[in-house]
Image (cartoon, one colour):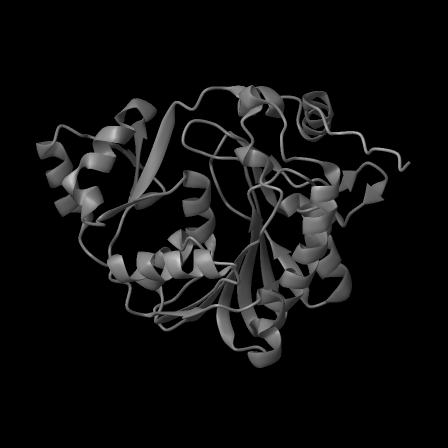
Amino acid sequence: MAKQKKRATLEDFKKRLDAINPNLFNMLSAPKTHFSFRVNLNRTTVKDVLEKLKQEGIEPQSVDWCEEAFVLPIEHREALVKSKPYTSKEVYIQNLSSIFAAISLKTEPEFWVLDLAAAPGGKSLIFSERAKKVSAVEPDKNRFFMMKRNFKESLAKNIQTYNKDGRFIYKACPQWFDAVFLDAPCSSEAHIDINKGITWWNQRRIYKFAKLQKELIISAFESLKTGGEMIYATCTFAPEENEAVVNYLLSKYPNAKLLPIPHNFQNTQEGLTKWQEEEYSKELSKTLRFLPNKAFSGFYMAKIVKE
């Protein structure tokens, strides 16, 4: 009889998180106190939305680094969802980590941006407001059609959608794009509800996604024009899916260089340059890991230029 594989436990998960950051487990365990949303500039203006929300008794807190992003206490979420601006697609609920990552991508009005693994499409909507054209790629058919509907309802008319496997986009579109964003499929550790225990998480899942992510980051980089910038991101904490993947890109492409990510946040940690027995490039310290706090979800991002 084959030996049954040991199921991962909450203690296994905590041990890994403690090795990354000793505060991480407690931060992930803490009840969510706030959420964030962004005004859909394809439909309306910030001023108009704030006036409408005020009429409904909703007065969100502004975010000083993004004029269209706002924060509310979690108990106000139901009121926002029932509000006219939300039901008319004038606001889009999106966590601050994702918003910051998207606006950190250098985007000019004449740019063509590639969003690889784009569903549900929140970041593509941001790019659609800042660039001339966006190509949003999503391999999963159900998520793809939900994303298309999202774009249509949001009146984002400059987004092209493709139900394709992002690993092979570079073969059809070598060095086509001025900027590329890859929020890679991952083990989603930032979305684990610790209070419900460990269900779907295990280290095999991490290794499975790391293999996929390495293929995707190569496709993203090959699709980027020389001189262009890209961002690699995940919603997981695992260094195998984050620093190791970026380090893999740097080792294969001497013209891939990491850029610093300016910010004033306290709930962050610079990228690791060593994990367990693995040594990474010292340049990985320029990458950024968001620790979950208020309206920020756990997140990792790296900003890369193609020289």
